[in-house]
Image (cartoon, rainbow, N blue to C red; front, side, top):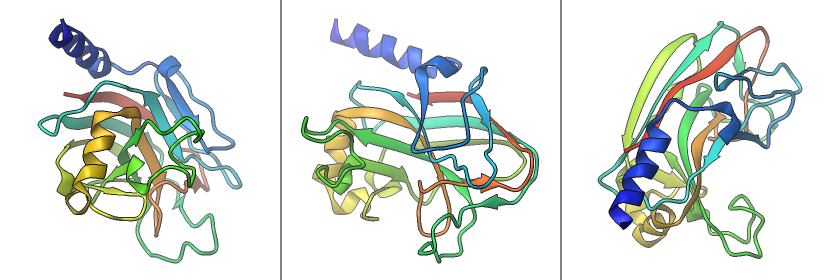
Length: 198
Protein backbone atom coordinates (compact mmCIF):
# COMPACT_ATOMS: atom_id res chain seq x y z
CA UNK A 1 0.00 0.00 0.00
CA UNK A 2 2.80 2.44 0.87
CA UNK A 3 4.45 1.70 -2.47
CA UNK A 4 1.22 2.51 -4.31
CA UNK A 5 0.81 5.81 -2.48
CA UNK A 6 4.41 6.82 -3.29
CA UNK A 7 3.97 6.01 -6.99
CA UNK A 8 0.78 8.06 -7.17
CA UNK A 9 2.49 11.01 -5.52
CA UNK A 10 5.34 10.91 -8.02
CA UNK A 11 2.92 10.79 -10.95
CA UNK A 12 1.06 13.80 -9.56
CA UNK A 13 4.09 16.04 -9.26
CA UNK A 14 5.49 14.92 -12.61
CA UNK A 15 2.34 16.12 -14.38
CA UNK A 16 2.16 19.47 -16.16
CA UNK A 17 2.18 22.06 -13.34
CA UNK A 18 -1.00 23.98 -12.47
CA UNK A 19 -0.80 27.51 -11.08
CA UNK A 20 -3.41 26.78 -8.39
CA UNK A 21 -1.00 24.53 -6.47
CA UNK A 22 1.96 26.94 -6.53
CA UNK A 23 2.71 30.04 -4.45
CA UNK A 24 5.00 33.04 -4.91
CA UNK A 25 6.66 33.75 -1.56
CA UNK A 26 8.62 36.79 -0.28
CA UNK A 27 7.84 38.46 -3.63
CA UNK A 28 6.17 41.76 -4.54
CA UNK A 29 4.71 43.34 -7.64
CA UNK A 30 4.15 39.95 -9.27
CA UNK A 31 1.34 37.40 -9.46
CA UNK A 32 0.95 33.92 -10.88
CA UNK A 33 -0.83 33.28 -14.16
CA UNK A 34 -2.21 30.13 -15.77
CA UNK A 35 -0.52 28.19 -17.34
CA UNK A 36 1.98 28.37 -14.49
CA UNK A 37 4.08 31.49 -14.93
CA UNK A 38 4.30 35.22 -14.27
CA UNK A 39 5.49 38.51 -15.70
CA UNK A 40 8.79 39.53 -14.12
CA UNK A 41 8.26 42.58 -11.89
CA UNK A 42 9.76 45.98 -12.48
CA UNK A 43 11.61 47.85 -9.72
CA UNK A 44 10.85 48.06 -6.80
CA UNK A 45 9.16 44.65 -7.05
CA UNK A 46 10.92 41.30 -6.93
CA UNK A 47 10.28 37.62 -7.54
CA UNK A 48 11.99 35.44 -4.94
CA UNK A 49 10.50 31.99 -4.23
CA UNK A 50 8.11 29.88 -6.33
CA UNK A 51 7.11 26.73 -4.43
CA UNK A 52 4.50 24.03 -4.14
CA UNK A 53 3.67 21.76 -1.23
CA UNK A 54 5.35 18.35 -1.25
CA UNK A 55 5.53 16.09 1.80
CA UNK A 56 6.55 12.72 0.34
CA UNK A 57 9.94 11.30 1.30
CA UNK A 58 12.57 12.02 -1.37
CA UNK A 59 15.18 9.34 -2.06
CA UNK A 60 18.76 10.17 -3.04
CA UNK A 61 18.22 7.90 -6.07
CA UNK A 62 15.64 10.39 -7.40
CA UNK A 63 16.20 13.59 -9.37
CA UNK A 64 14.67 17.05 -9.59
CA UNK A 65 13.81 17.98 -13.20
CA UNK A 66 12.28 21.07 -14.71
CA UNK A 67 11.87 22.89 -17.99
CA UNK A 68 11.23 26.63 -18.01
CA UNK A 69 10.76 29.28 -20.67
CA UNK A 70 11.67 32.97 -20.55
CA UNK A 71 10.22 35.33 -23.18
CA UNK A 72 11.91 38.72 -23.36
CA UNK A 73 15.45 39.94 -22.89
CA UNK A 74 15.58 42.73 -20.30
CA UNK A 75 18.33 43.26 -17.77
CA UNK A 76 17.72 40.86 -14.87
CA UNK A 77 18.68 42.84 -11.78
CA UNK A 78 19.66 40.92 -8.65
CA UNK A 79 21.31 43.76 -6.70
CA UNK A 80 18.29 44.51 -4.52
CA UNK A 81 20.31 45.00 -1.33
CA UNK A 82 23.46 47.10 -0.86
CA UNK A 83 25.30 44.17 0.74
CA UNK A 84 24.83 41.96 -2.34
CA UNK A 85 28.29 42.73 -3.73
CA UNK A 86 29.12 39.43 -5.50
CA UNK A 87 29.21 39.44 -9.29
CA UNK A 88 27.26 36.34 -10.35
CA UNK A 89 24.51 36.41 -13.03
CA UNK A 90 20.83 36.25 -12.08
CA UNK A 91 19.66 32.63 -11.88
CA UNK A 92 16.90 30.35 -10.75
CA UNK A 93 17.76 27.26 -8.71
CA UNK A 94 15.92 24.11 -7.67
CA UNK A 95 14.96 24.36 -4.01
CA UNK A 96 13.79 22.07 -1.19
CA UNK A 97 12.43 23.24 2.15
CA UNK A 98 11.96 20.93 5.10
CA UNK A 99 9.21 20.70 7.67
CA UNK A 100 10.22 22.58 10.81
CA UNK A 101 9.24 22.56 14.51
CA UNK A 102 5.81 24.03 15.27
CA UNK A 103 7.37 27.06 16.92
CA UNK A 104 8.77 28.13 13.51
CA UNK A 105 6.46 29.67 10.88
CA UNK A 106 8.69 28.17 8.17
CA UNK A 107 12.31 27.26 7.44
CA UNK A 108 13.34 30.82 6.58
CA UNK A 109 13.21 31.76 10.28
CA UNK A 110 16.28 31.50 12.51
CA UNK A 111 14.48 28.97 14.73
CA UNK A 112 15.01 26.46 11.90
CA UNK A 113 18.42 24.92 11.10
CA UNK A 114 20.24 26.14 8.00
CA UNK A 115 20.01 22.62 6.58
CA UNK A 116 16.20 22.91 6.40
CA UNK A 117 16.65 24.83 3.14
CA UNK A 118 18.63 23.24 0.32
CA UNK A 119 19.52 24.65 -3.09
CA UNK A 120 20.96 23.02 -6.17
CA UNK A 121 24.61 24.05 -6.27
CA UNK A 122 26.35 24.66 -8.62
CA UNK A 123 23.67 23.68 -11.16
CA UNK A 124 21.31 26.56 -11.97
CA UNK A 125 19.55 28.20 -14.92
CA UNK A 126 20.79 31.66 -15.86
CA UNK A 127 17.95 34.11 -16.48
CA UNK A 128 17.91 34.97 -20.16
CA UNK A 129 15.57 34.47 -23.10
CA UNK A 130 15.00 30.88 -24.17
CA UNK A 131 13.76 27.47 -23.04
CA UNK A 132 15.95 25.59 -20.59
CA UNK A 133 15.87 22.18 -18.94
CA UNK A 134 17.74 21.12 -15.82
CA UNK A 135 17.95 17.78 -13.98
CA UNK A 136 19.71 17.55 -10.62
CA UNK A 137 20.10 14.28 -8.68
CA UNK A 138 19.35 14.38 -4.96
CA UNK A 139 22.89 13.48 -4.00
CA UNK A 140 24.52 15.49 -1.20
CA UNK A 141 27.39 16.92 -3.25
CA UNK A 142 24.86 18.63 -5.57
CA UNK A 143 23.02 20.62 -2.88
CA UNK A 144 24.00 23.25 -0.31
CA UNK A 145 22.10 24.82 2.58
CA UNK A 146 21.33 28.36 3.74
CA UNK A 147 24.84 28.69 5.17
CA UNK A 148 26.46 27.41 1.97
CA UNK A 149 27.33 24.03 3.51
CA UNK A 150 27.16 21.20 1.00
CA UNK A 151 25.17 18.11 1.85
CA UNK A 152 28.22 15.85 2.04
CA UNK A 153 29.51 18.05 4.86
CA UNK A 154 26.25 17.73 6.81
CA UNK A 155 24.85 14.36 5.81
CA UNK A 156 22.39 14.19 8.71
CA UNK A 157 20.90 17.60 7.94
CA UNK A 158 20.61 16.88 4.22
CA UNK A 159 19.00 13.48 4.84
CA UNK A 160 16.51 15.03 7.27
CA UNK A 161 15.36 17.55 4.64
CA UNK A 162 14.83 14.80 2.06
CA UNK A 163 12.98 12.66 4.59
CA UNK A 164 10.64 15.45 5.73
CA UNK A 165 10.09 17.96 2.91
CA UNK A 166 7.43 20.66 3.10
CA UNK A 167 7.92 22.62 -0.12
CA UNK A 168 9.80 22.13 -3.39
CA UNK A 169 10.25 24.54 -6.24
CA UNK A 170 12.74 27.19 -7.27
CA UNK A 171 14.19 30.48 -6.10
CA UNK A 172 15.44 33.52 -7.97
CA UNK A 173 18.54 35.49 -7.12
CA UNK A 174 22.08 36.34 -8.09
CA UNK A 175 25.30 37.71 -6.72
CA UNK A 176 25.83 36.42 -3.18
CA UNK A 177 22.30 35.08 -2.67
CA UNK A 178 20.28 32.30 -4.29
CA UNK A 179 16.83 33.52 -3.24
CA UNK A 180 16.91 37.25 -2.52
CA UNK A 181 15.02 38.04 -5.68
CA UNK A 182 15.28 39.65 -9.09
CA UNK A 183 13.46 42.32 -11.05
CA UNK A 184 13.73 43.65 -14.60
CA UNK A 185 13.93 46.89 -16.58
CA UNK A 186 11.65 45.75 -19.40
CA UNK A 187 8.95 43.23 -20.34
CA UNK A 188 9.67 39.53 -19.73
CA UNK A 189 7.52 36.50 -19.01
CA UNK A 190 8.36 33.26 -17.23
CA UNK A 191 6.66 29.87 -17.63
CA UNK A 192 7.18 26.51 -15.93
CA UNK A 193 6.69 24.00 -18.74
CA UNK A 194 7.53 20.82 -16.83
CA UNK A 195 8.41 19.99 -13.23
CA UNK A 196 9.07 16.59 -11.71
CA UNK A 197 10.60 14.68 -8.84
CA UNK A 198 11.16 11.11 -9.97
